[in-house]
Image 1 (cartoon, rainbow, N blue to C red):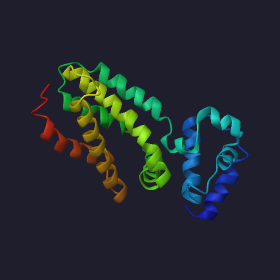
Image 2: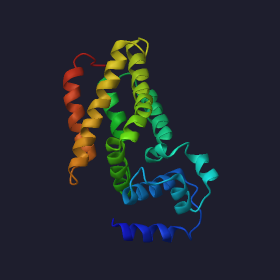
Image 3: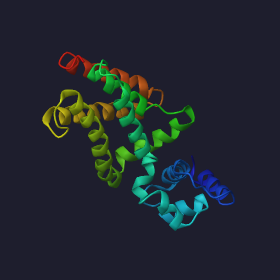
Image 4: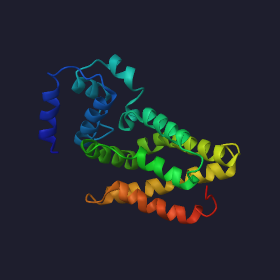
Length: 206
């Protein structure tokens, strides 16, 4: 999107009904970040484009750094619930594979926003630093599930090692996805997790 067309899009939003959806606020912010740059875009800019006040903005997001993550907490809660509901007969690595695919599957209309989101999260220094908190929360969900399956504390070596390994594999798939506009994220994740399954599957068959 060019600077001029982006500016027109923002101006067009000012006259519409105020946005009160976290997802829509995140989308508006992503458009502005692409147009102007992350550091150059202020909370005031985003609030104005959404037709809301700064006070209303902070009801949905505690900071500008949280915007690219959208409704991450709800997704994380859904991932935890999905893992908790899986039968014990599903092998450990297979269960984690299924959960990650579910976590990263988005409606077609959301994919362009998700690509912008991840490009920002993996390249903007301030967001890379901020992301450590989100990644830690994601790893904790994985470690809790692994620990429960193995009968050990989530803080012990095996659950933590697997959580870190899954995060690394996921981020490597994302890097490949961002590098090739024609690639498919789910296919990349499937391929990456197949390699992980080769390493861990025999050790944790069920």
